[in-house]
Length: 430
Image 1: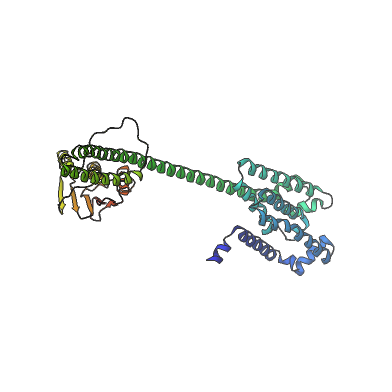
Image 2: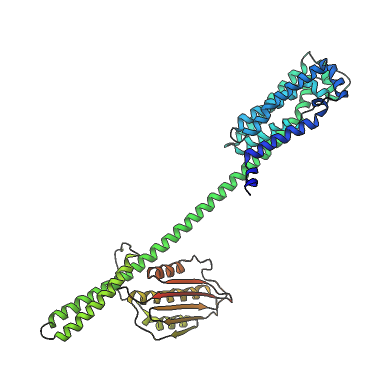
């Protein structure tokens, strides 16, 4: 695995590409690079001797070195790499005598097209690649035209390159012929690179939109959790405030009966101790979801499990059959647990009405144990309320259960329908 990762690194890939182009260039030009007799005799007419030909080939390879270097640096300095590769290819193209003896542009000269692709694909602005392409083609054409018009080679070169039998072809026309294929290759390289650049920008824009959407979802989830915590805090505030009020009243009664009726005072003080302990337990839960209370706090009595039959009747009257099952002997619950249990059933039945579909029924099961109460609400509808598990209603239920130190599970049933199961501790901390 590490070897595969090493081979996929851009520097390693570029080095492999450079080696491949050099090897194929030597293979295609083997008649000159390894000296073929027929090719050597043909070259002697232009270079004077085999030794002069070999010296010329050394200079050809020196001119190829910038192309190899360009492939190795194309991702770090793309414009510099393209300039080096284009200069190398231009030197080879201007070596008209080698072209006459059968040495055309070789694969190593494709480095110019490869580096132009790199420029077009990574440029911040599209104009950068276009300017590089236009400049290379213009300089290429002018220098080739001037070389062909030179008196040193003359009409023989023009006739040999174009395959005609006279020297009347102009240098500009011959230059157009010689630059057509290289310009086409450069144009294709630029087009592919520009298309890659556009796809990369579109993908980056798509990733940015997806990241923004995810942030917005997280923000909405955070707001929903904050709102639910604020509501829980208000409700727990009411519970604790009620407990403290009861303690004050009972303490006053105990003070009044302390001398005249000691037994009555003792009972009242016992109630004060029990209420104080329960209130301290609720206060501990309150501190886990601390939020500043808004103005206009309503101090109306909060519902509990005693109001559950009325809630179920309300849902039935709305058209959703609900079956209630109670396991174990119902016991008085701490105020916060009593309130949260009611809210969990209320929210789950609301989800059933909204999402389970027409004709769906629900089952509410309460199981009382020594130190906990288990609440399970399930429906048999084809719908999937908050099927992704991220609905605000389910977030509220989860927040309530966590605030009380319980456990909650919500999700679709294998056989159909949706269910919510919560386990709430009922033993108050000492």
